[in-house]
Image (tube, rainbow, N blue to C red; front, side, top):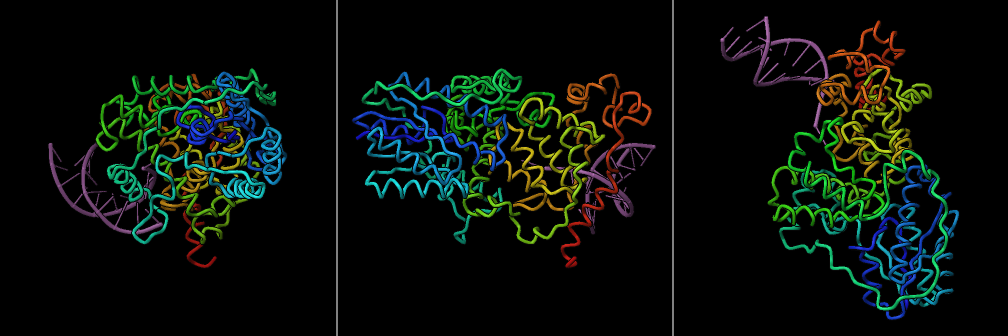
Length: 472
DNA sequence: AGCTGTTTATC
DNA sequence: ATAAACAGC
């Protein structure tokens, strides 16, 4: 049989369950499919950085597949509702008897996949779908009561125990297609940010991802617990875009680390163990998305949080987006996000909490902005992070936890290097004043006064949550 | 994966 | 005088 392998956010050849299946079973060759779906992507708030990155990855993937005799064909549609028919027509045109893909779990994606399965089924074609994104499939872990986990710590305990109990998580050896097809690949849409600074920062291809991982393991992972919260240290892996697009699998990351330290996941040294914990967070947030799909529909995880009275403050929102809040670390972070399409995780928490708590602007506005600007935009992780910061989520920060942006700045950018890199007008301010310049220094630098007073804003944020209990 | 104001401990 | 511990948000 000839297989149609549908690539989505699994843009890789190694450790790709759907592709492996087609290689092992495809006695009449393989056709690869991709579904450019711009209107739907835009409806999901994907911005140019994300779309550019994905299209460059698909371009790379098409070249790699071509070398193996697997032509990549496009089934372009405007919205997901038209995708099943477009794929079926592709399968008919190229006489593919089966469709293989790796599961996506978001509500719209899952509905599209279900409709595709039905369309292929009605047409008498075979369908196989694989769990791929998580190291442990979301449906494999449950609490004592049989529900999906809502709290990270017990989830991570169950996660590790599942591995100890012998769950087979290691990547399977790659299979080669049995038959090469001599058919030209389709020409792809142009990436929207071709030759831009952002696209130069995030090269395409699995080789690049593997080099980044290798370098991270060699240079950074041992000191990761001490360095990971310091944005100026560049001590994090920066693999999030690769993981979001599926250029490299989290299984491959885990296997590479276990091999490098010659240890099972539960016996890794502190540094690599701390980083692996970040991979578990990714598994956790996707597990939460599968168990509690209302978070895909702009709903807070905690139902009662729907009644929070967020402020409508477009000018404050714009000041936050553009890095003009008058809090140096917040502004440096927001400017680095716009310029690079990426943001250090500590700073994601700092700026998210600032928007939700200090400005009392709906976390969904921030979530949308992140989707629009991040190369690594991914619903489960982005939503999880925002709802953590907004105190509306699973295992979220308690509502009274309000980061003091100045304290965070002193603690995590002690020498002010990150601030001076991204707020150049402040570069001449020496010493600890960088965290909280006085009025004269601000005026001289053309840097704004703080948009809100921290103490007052903190109190008002706490009040906003207290109102919920008073029926207000 | 916090902050703040207050009390208590130690020099 | 300063730090550590604690309570409450």
